[in-house]
Length: 436
Image (tube, rainbow, N blue to C red):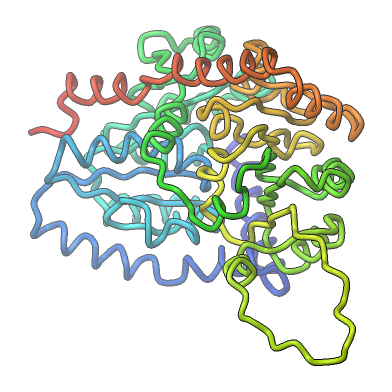
């Protein structure tokens, strides 16, 4: 019965995507990106037959999960030079950003889950090791891997009591978990939850590989010249992954504090949203126009004409590209992380905290253990209104002692949590998953 309902869900999801693709660009990419997958896979397999090395398949739902899995992917490439890596995404937001710059040998969409697709995909790929990141469980793929006895690991898993695994109707989800050889989870709470449904010997608390990734990014930091010129010697507030609700909390503060530089990196960078941001922030400039602004061409001055009054220099930089945010936090005096005023909750707080900068965000964050722990550690502060935002930022900018305490708490929290990748690689080595 549960499998019947699951198949109905798959059917409705596929039909819904096809209909939505008629007007939605993201859904259209989801659909079109899967058209030539089987031809691509045959080409990959033909090349791998000549290579002779092992093939590691890593699956990520989206871009955030890829950043979690990336340290493991890079460690495999380093320790097993003959191994080839296949990276699959379910969402366009991951594939479109990383299809040409992922570190993997092959990148593609994962075909929609079905018994036929799972059999065909795994038969063509013939992976030696499969790694799934955090969540997103597809029944037919997972059970087919178990049937083929392919080693399968879950990395950075996180579990909550409200998930189907822990409900009376969760048997189908238990079957999926039973397909994994080992479950690497982030917390003791996740391990205890899994114990209540019979998973004991194949569960380890490794921590979250995102800590390893953000430390890696911070320690490999390279300056962004234009951003440095924009910031100068000013205090800087970097707001990352913002939605409209976040921007409306920030705009009054930015518009009334010309002495502070603001950098807004929105979660969505389509033209309509960028124009909305420009309306909110009265003295703003897009990053794509910053170079021309900083090095303007000389203009001839007409004689006997009154010159216009000097326009205020922009104090808000709007980032209209993807891929720069993790570096921008380096320039912050204070960081603001978006999402905390929406139903899904706050975005990645670790990318900012790793630089030892105070983190400020909205009230919706309980689903994310790292956000909860960062608040408890004193590295993050929660605000509920624009007035609270302004008071919190003003306090941090004027109280040097409190500011330094928050900075140190943020950095210590991240660095004390790194090391998950090493534990996962030790398991792969000890169990000879990539050696004959």
